[in-house]
Structures are given as C-alpha cells and as structure tokens.
Length: 466
Image 1 (cartoon, rainbow, N blue to C red):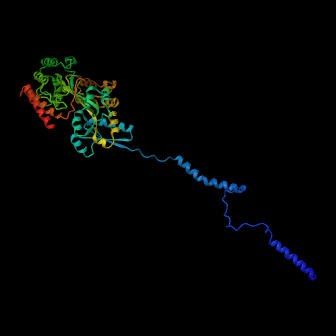
Image 2 (spheres, helix red, strand yellow; image 1 turned 60 degrees about the vertical axis):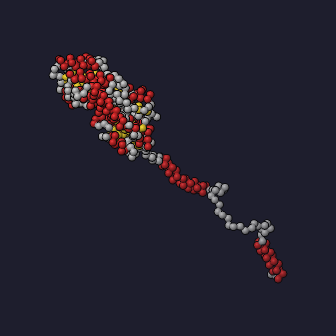
Image 3 (cartoon, rainbow, N blue to C red; image 1 turned 60 degrees about the horizontal axis):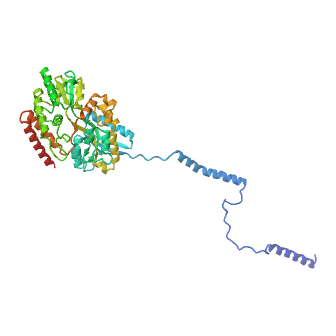
C-alpha cells in the first residue's frame, strides 16, 4: 500500500473510533446521583407467577400463627375474677336443738347467696360481750336475742334502727300483733321477729277435759271455782300449778297473766318506757287477793321442777307453762291439751342490726337476712322442726303449722298477751314483783303492803338507772 493510501485509511479509522467514543453526547445527561435505593416489594409492576406464588405462600405462613393464637384466645375465655365473699357475723343467745335448727336455716341462705358467708356464734352472756366488742368494732352484724333487750342496747349504741328498710306497715302486715308491736321503741323499728312464746294452761287429759276449764280466758272466778271442785273430788291432787305462785317463788314472769288479767294499764307491763311503775294499782291488788284465795286449793311450794313432776306423775291436772315444757310431757307420754288463760307476757325472739354492721357497710345484706329469717317459709320450717311458735302470721296459720298442736294452740293463747316491755328500765320490775308475790302469798305481808313496797323499790331502781 502506497503512503497516500495508508494515510487515508488511518484517518478513517481514527474518525470511526472518535465517533464511537462520543456517541449520545448530543443529548444532555442528568447530574450524577446517589446509587438508587432498592424498591419495596410493593412495586406497581406485577411479579412473575412464581414470585406471586412465593409471596402468597409466605404471607399465608406468616399469618397462620397470629390466626391460631387468636382462635386459641377466643376458645379459652379469660379466667373470671373470684366473687367477693362478705362475712356476716350473727351472735345468738339460744342453744340446744333450736340453735341447731337455725344453723340449717342460715346454711340454706348461704346456698342461695354464695357471695355471703354467715358466721353464727353462740354467746352465753350477750350483754357483757356486746359491751366489750361493739366499742372495739368487733361486735356482730346481727344480734339475735329477745325484745326486752331492745331499749338497753339501743340506749348504749349496741344496735341501730332499721326503720329505713323495715317500717311498721311491714311489721303489721306480716306478724302477730304482739310481735309487731314489740319491734318498735322510741318510734323506730329495731328488728324483725324470729318467733314468739308465752304461757297457757297445759292440762293432763287423764285428769280433766277442756270443759272443766272456763272458756272465757279472763274468768278468774270460774277458774277458782273449778280448782275448788277438783280438789274436793280429788283430795290428794291439785288442779293447777303455777311456778310463780308459791310461798318461796319469786317469778314475776309466770305470775304476769294473773296480774295483767285483772286489767289496768296492761299495755306497758309493770314499767313503761319513761320509767313509770305500775305495780301498786287497784288491778294488781285485786289479782293478789285472788291468789290468796287460790292458795287454799293450790300447792304451797312451786317451781318448774315441782310443777313438771306433778303433771307428769298425774298429781296435778294443769301446768301453767310455755312451749319449752312440751318436750318433757311428750317424753313422759302425757296426753295433754292447751287452753289460753289470762294475759301472759309475750316474749319475742328477734334479729337486730348491730352497730358495727353500719361501720362495715353491711346494712343491705343484714336487712335481707333479717327479712329472710322473718319469712313465712323459714318460720314455718322452724315450727315443724323444733316446735316453735311462729311470729309470722302466714306461717302460724299455714295448714302445716296448724297440724303441730302445740304451736297452733300457744299461738292462739299469745294473741291475748302483751309483749314484754322493751324499755331500758325493764330490770326494775322483776325483783320487786317476785318478792311482793312471795311476801303476801306466804302471809308475811298483806297484798296492799307487799305491792306498795314493790312499787317503791321499783321506782328507786328506775331512778338509779336514769
């Protein structure tokens, strides 16, 4: 190749190389940037079928544990919080079979109300126990006792009124007259009746019939004549035994049907709520004089044991006593009848709200328990199991209870009586009345002298208690 041709080829090669090296420079290029960040998997461009399947499978497996955990949580509900249990303490003044019977009643309440635990405590001396426990905040939520304790316990703040939940209309609609009236003190309602008791004439059918006893329960002249007729026909036996009427007896409770049966202001008993004393009155003197006539045909010495032995052995026709004596007659196989007579003191067992129940905020539960225990169902059950006399009118008149002779008969007798006073001055009556009865019955004093001295003694005691 000649030199000219060589140069031409060389120039063509260099031009081609320059063109290749500068290709695309005709358009401006962007400024240099940071290296691009890898795009998220949420690219708008669809993934390939294989990538899509892998993605779905991955997501499916990724979601499975969460779904399984959710299902497990749904199938196994969270454990419930244990219900709070409220303990209600009840102090009761009774023992024996009756205490066992009420234990069963409260157990039934617990079964209906698992949120409530009832702690039933037997107390021998409730007055002393309350005096110590209540100020210390350790007293019972419910005090179960008898209504003559209302005034004294209310006065010192051991119990509180329940009028806010239980009014007199409720009492009058559901309970016997004496029981309803006994719950009220100083215009407030202090409890719910539990049962009632009082005395009547319990006679031995082997010696007399009901026709031998006056049908009028206030016919004391008729009763005295019946006693004389019986004594004349049976010189070695006695017509009637009352443990409150004897030369050494000092029992103001058992002699009450005679004192109140002769009339007077007998709605208040021997002492009223203001401390007025009703022992030396014309009506009480008349009753005392009747007892002196009765002494001619009655045993001189009397007591619970003497009267019980006399009727079970067939030596006494009548025992003036209460429901508590029936078991002994039944055990002795005595065929007995019950007849109301006089105007007895009616004792009412009741439930009261303890002051510490308010401190604990237990008022609503306490009231519910009290109403439950006062219900016709519960009181009828106690009568059937333990022979008590229901204070609840529907229970007393139920066919089941009416078939329990002692409960129905004593129930009728108590309609004649008056409730034992719930005055705080109640202790002023017992000693003076009992001592006066023994004094004139033994001949140591006349009825007028004995009752006048008793009046003065009771008034002095009242003054010391004010």
